[in-house]
Amino acid sequence: MNMTKVFVPMVFAVLCSSPAFSASWLECNGDSGKKLRWGGNSTTARINTGSFPAGSVLQAAQRGVNITNTNPSPFTINHTTETGGVGSGNGQNEIWAASISPPGEARMRYHCYWLFGWHYGLDEVDIVLDSTGPSWTTSQNKNANSTYTGSSSPIDAVIVHEAGHYLGLMHVNWEYNVMGDSWRHHHTNGGSAITYFGEDASHGARVLYGSQGSAFNDVSASHWRRTGASGEYSSHDRVRVRNNANTGTLTGITIAGEPGYRVNRGSVVRPEFTIENNGKQAHANVSFGLYVSTNDFISYSDTRIGGGTFGSIHPADVLTTTIPVIIPNFLNAGQNYWLGIIVDEDNDINEVNGSNNRAYIPIRVQ
Image 1 (cartoon, rainbow, N blue to C red):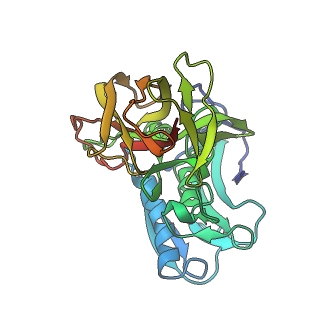
Image 2 (cartoon, rainbow, N blue to C red; image 1 turned 45 degrees about the horizontal axis):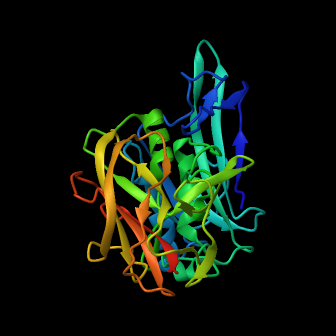
């Protein structure tokens, strides 16, 4: 799924930066010292109630903006509602729905010109969602989400991606991130699949606006990973279970409508997870535990079968890694289990969000 951005450049060339293992943004005249951003640390988005009426639809759009605001920069997107007409170029940042080709697009207006000195910055960003193509859901339940067992696309997933453009962020295809494939960018445990801003976009927000003064620590785990690039966008898929040598992936199987893997009792396997640091500073010796559960909700009450520490988790380089663990002999052959991870298992980090530290992979024991 691709999402379109519309730019309105002024006078001089505007280039998009693409440093390795980093976020992306627009630069006036190709100068890294002239990043296109707002002049202050806030802007306001006006959500059109003709497109997003009061109730769950409006709440989903507001939630998407609020998720974008959950990052370690001082920048805030305030949101309000409006009625009446909408349009690009009216000097207002608006969010509405219309019949368009992609599921969603950000229409960015900015200036970049020289007149007795350089003048550059963002002027207006509008978000438009397609009102005629996709089947949308306001739910955060994975059984409503088409990337899991549902049939609809979550409104907040596309809002978070497009609201990243509000900050001045651009698409990224070289790393797992919300500015790529936002449909497959969730923290999922149990029945909830929560869209989030993530490490790469949070790093980009700090590059553009600096770091907020208050403490902002947040490490997390996801069962999604980058698999490649689709044009400007990263492609994502579920993490895997690899063999002990990490040279191959185990045999796949569908479990409760989700991709899983066949594992042998007593064997060493390497479950794969994506670990992120969504905060401001690196963390060393971050504890983790590996658990086996009889359901898709990973908790401390499940059976711990391994663990250790990550030497360092940096807030500018998403880590997708495999971890060796022995499948216990006491598990029942022919039964489905969920192999999970809990990051910051010892709760040593004072986090702004402790509910995103868990992820799972379904397995069938043989």
